[in-house]
Length: 279
Image (cartoon, rainbow, N blue to C red; front, side, top):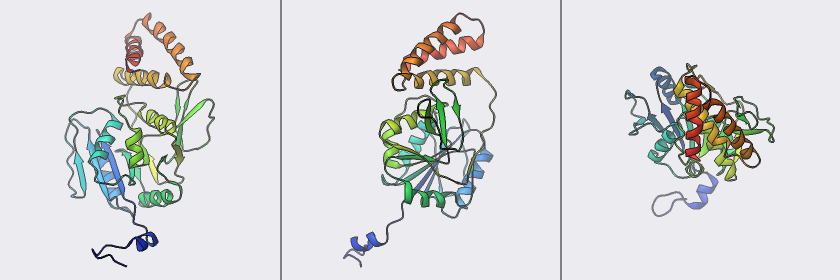
């Protein structure tokens, strides 16, 4: 059963398939207690991650104390997907490894990773982008609906995987995660759009022990700027005829905000102009 180099033979390895590696990459920002809780839950689960990588985006360096955790710090924060790419590049894993990409304010159950592995063996693949639920973006209004359902109107809705929890094969993530430096918002929509345009499938992992406890953020000019700019950019990249619909609508929006006084209209005007520079 063994080769001359004391390795399992090809015949035996096909009878006993090798375990697929699970690489967890999470992006830390702000809430140290939430990150500590998620790390502790991952390391106490029924299936441990083969690698656990924290990408530290916080202004204050994150101090971790477990030797099983790799904490890396980019030179600058270029956004959530850019942080995940930075973490994935640091992973020592083959292309067929399963990536589990998480927000630091996520909560999981003990069987979280073992359930992902079991589901992936049956339903996963080289061109699958999965998560605990499928969200949808209205092509008509540009508003998103975050939920766990899998039903959506393909004519008026664009399905996408909420970025708080993304499960994907490493090779496919490398293909679809080109960085556009959107920063903060709409990055998960862009990732899902690239997955689908590359022939990938958006799929739900049902009954996964996962919750995203995203703290409510106070309204700010910075938040509004990125929401509007990134949204305008993404919506104008939809397929015809929706791209034309949004090109016209955004021109009207720009005209409207540019003639009205106030900080909110100034932020919207700047965001819509900057969206054109991204295209």
